[in-house]
Image 1 (cartoon, rainbow, N blue to C red):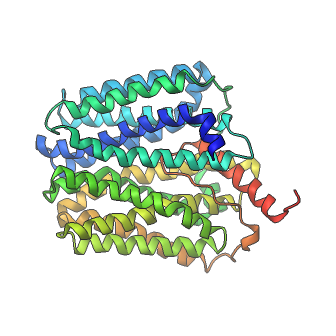
Image 2 (cartoon, helix red, strand yellow):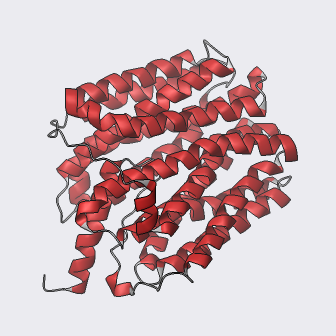
Length: 419
């Protein structure tokens, strides 16, 4: 781990600065939208825009890199991110913010593809698992720390929009000055939805449902907090609890997934997450209960993505991993786009508890589908499973492919200690 950190720290430091900027803008817009008088439905459209752009970027960024190179793509997209962050308070209108969120989502997706390509190229087969773990930890730390930055200024002013813009601009320096461009890579056409469903119905349906739950959590958390009248410090801590829960639970659940039937673990984790969301819906008037609900939901829903990806990898060979990863991201993106929109509608119909109600429906549906799938396909022997590799839902195809390859290779080595 220290060896990876020593060789890739400039890249990881730059990525953490990027996550600080991204984490600030997501929560800040939810708070500022309430100050500007935007309705919950309008804010749900704004927040959904990020996931529209992110899905588009995940499809187009590899081709952009192939044509003009990693450095140009990274610098261009990063510049757009910095500019949009400054423009948010200048054009405080729902449609302007929606367009800004689409552009920022597109740019962040491309930035992740580029940065992950560099990181993957710098890692070897021996330390790729550690590199993936460090990458995930850096991302989570960046988003958690970002919530504290919201306390440095007034959300009704300009300063809090300037801070993430500066952080994103500074993030370029350690990355671009410390690494060399990686060779251009070939784009791979994703699997059709029918093929993807045939490989792993549970993973296919699961990442779609989880995309909705994830985007609702993080896209609408600040909007929900403002809706129930929480102060800015309380909203910041509330949002941070989702990410803190994900950070502490991802590795233990990954360890468990290598030692038991992954479908059973997916079922249990999704059900516990649904119970946590139901707790938030029923006891949402108590702030302590909200923090506990956020911790439980975050610690269950985020690791679910890794579990679902690992389960799909159990049934893939090396030739299909790249195509499958693109298909998984597409399905997850479709679910993510719908999450804020449906959550905004449910808040309008059921009031603030509708935020938690939507998340609980998604997670309980995933648990129920996992239970049904356990009756349709025999369990895979634990020793035949690939090794779990941690990935987050904002990871690009580069990381998903690297995680899949590492998981298969590491799983084979575990079966044959002499290899």
